[in-house]
Every structure is written in structure tokens, then in C-alpha cells.
Length: 215
Image (cartoon, rainbow, N blue to C red; front, side):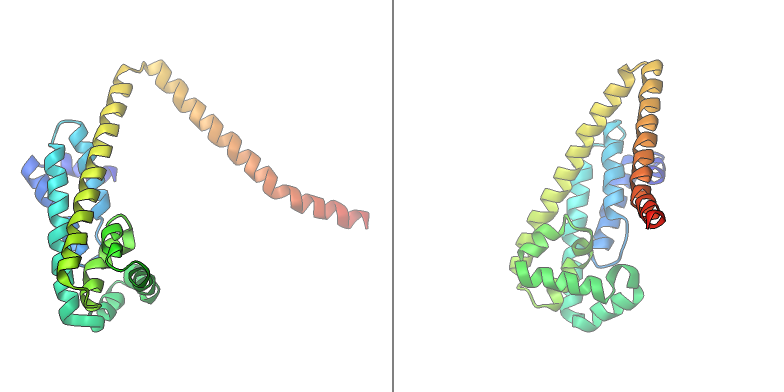
């Protein structure tokens, strides 16, 4: 994600907005792309003042709504053979097991799977094509799609934007000595927890060895 953010920072704001909309739009058509990572990186970039958060959110929402609608049209026209081709092309992301889980979600939740699917990596990719292939009425799909896309885009963007601003302010006011102490404390705590976990994993084995020796 840091690589994406460093790459985005070298671009003009308009290019960042277009990339956010484009990556999320193509992902929503049914092609596995790092849409969420792109949105997270752009939102954190907005916290530095390089881009505007409202335009990042708007670009993400537009990409999500348009991409899902194109994916819906493709799924309605191509049907299940299209989903099978996507599965063969991207077996790691859209294989039979992933498709079965997505279909189960649609069977349980209906059009709400489109709304909440925007917050789930698998459904974010498959919602449009799958809704089209299953012949979900487009008007109902569009309402759920637009509502989910807007909520996901603006909530994610502004949450990360404000968290980034708080983190930037905190780090700015923190002395280097305090930062070093915090890092060392974190490393020490991690080492201690790993050591305890390792010892806990080894205890049953040692107990079995002692018991075997006693017998």
C-alpha cells in the first residue's frame, strides 16, 4: 500500500481522481484489481493536503456505481458462462468456491447482498456480474448499488482522512526520543508475546514426554 501511495503522490490531483475511479470501476466490472488499496492510499494522501477528500470519495463512488452497472450488463448478457470464464481466468479470486459463496449470499440476502457487498472484497468484484446473471431487476440493483457505493466511498475516505490527520498531528508533536521509546516498547512487547506463545505451544509436548518417561 505504501508503494501505491508513493506512486500517487507524484501525480497531479486530477490524475489521482481518475486512477481511483478507473481502478475501482474496473474492479467492480468483475476484474480483480486493488480497488480498496487504491482508495485507502488516496484517502491517506488527502490527509497530507495533496488531494481533496471529497473528490477522492466522489471518484470512488462514481467508479463503483458505473463499474457495477457495466458488470451487471455484462453478466445479464453473458449469464453463467461469463462467470465460468471469469473463474477460469482468475481462479484464485473467482473460482468455483468463491462463486458458490457469492451465490449463497445472494440467495440469503437478495438485493441487500449488492448493498453490503461493497464492503466485502469478494462481493465487491462479483456483485455486478452475478446480479446480472441472476436477472436481478436493474432498478432494484441500481438503488442498492448506488447506496452501497456512496456509503462505502465516503465512509472509507473520510474515516481514513481524519485518522491520517490525527496521526500526522500526533507524530509532528512527538519528540524523537519519545518515538524511539514507543518503537522499542512495541518491539519488546511483540517479542515477549511471541516468546510466551512459543512456550505455551511447547508445554503440552513436554508434558507428554514426561508422562511417557514416567510410564
